[in-house]
Image 1: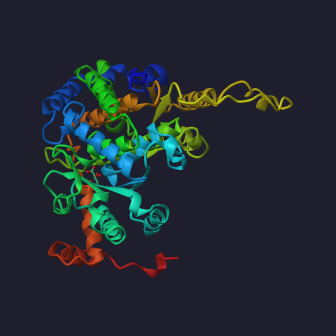
Image 2: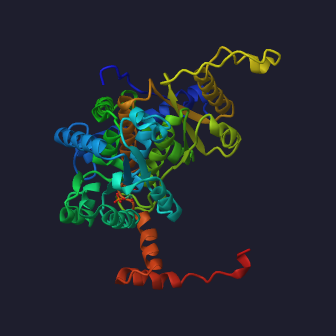
Image 3: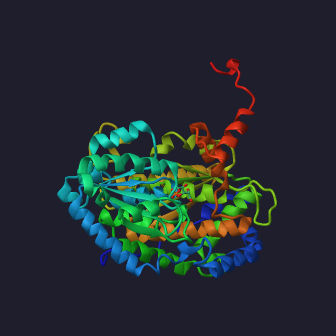
Length: 474
Ligand code: PA5
């Protein structure tokens, strides 16, 4: 960790503000000041609740000394004994591991020869597409694979059905030793996975009761897969703590996550900016956008306030990759509805330099690229996009990582988590539940014919829908 750049990430909101965009499209500083008392109250609520209820994630940078040691030991064992590591999980039990692996390891990690990789191949299986399960089984050998079954509730159908598949296969292929191939990461008490883990003696890691799925990346959910793949998890936690230290103040101008929450609150509530596009200009960060999408969508999309008032809060998060999506989505962002804010993720120093050779002198528009680098080109294109948005009165903001490493990623994760908690306070909603997901879950069990009363009732209720008409099926 010693050579790692530990500079702070920055949040630049110039292109959100009326000073840059004008009063028609931008946010006036005075508007932000008007919300100062609410912002202060939001910070005080989050600080007062630290470590309690669903705010257990605030303490993860500080309270995992022994857990980190156990994770590192287990990771070492896995690296010695297995050539493949498969995470079985979904939502908050998968998006963090995917994002961190993409950000911090080689972009073609699995394809590297074993000696260059230095750890097992990693697959994170966050869907139940039957072709995908078959495809996984086609490329792994279960005899040399370790499966990390991750589920906070210990009951998620997608993950438990994957567990049933791999445990049966393991029993066939490795006999008595099958349980040595499974590591469970789950709640300390709730759910079925904890019971299975105890019954069969799986290696076991806990998700603290106060840490919800989408806030769990910095506990064993994310730390174990990262450590197995050689990522410096201590630096990630150190980065999170560094961001935490910057998020103490009640003053928005001294607390980046609080400023961000207030600006997005103004966007959502006062300006009808109901879409936030996260646009990393770096392939390494493209799945951070997915991770953020879940965090923001599931936390803020609510139809009732904490006082029980009806509402329809939330801001639709969209993932877009720079520069790739300049050639697919940018037209909409510059000229479509005024309902979007674009968040650029910028990398100051990439881990590779890619010079563009001279050539094609007969074509000046090609030749001028010679002698520059892809590093310069990607940043020039980000600035070009920022300008194009500005010219059309569209808001954007830029989060800059001095470089992508475990420390800066830890900062970014904690920044987004704090922003989400503050936004929940400002909107006065419960940012830590997800009741809207339940209906679909119960309905699917009913469709699948679960015979317990709850699902039978749902099956009957579903029959009351208006019958589908052939005329509408072409
Ligand atoms: O944020 C959440 O709580 C959810 O998105 C969960 O992460 C997701 O539903 C998976 O749940 P579990 O980890 O219980 O399997």
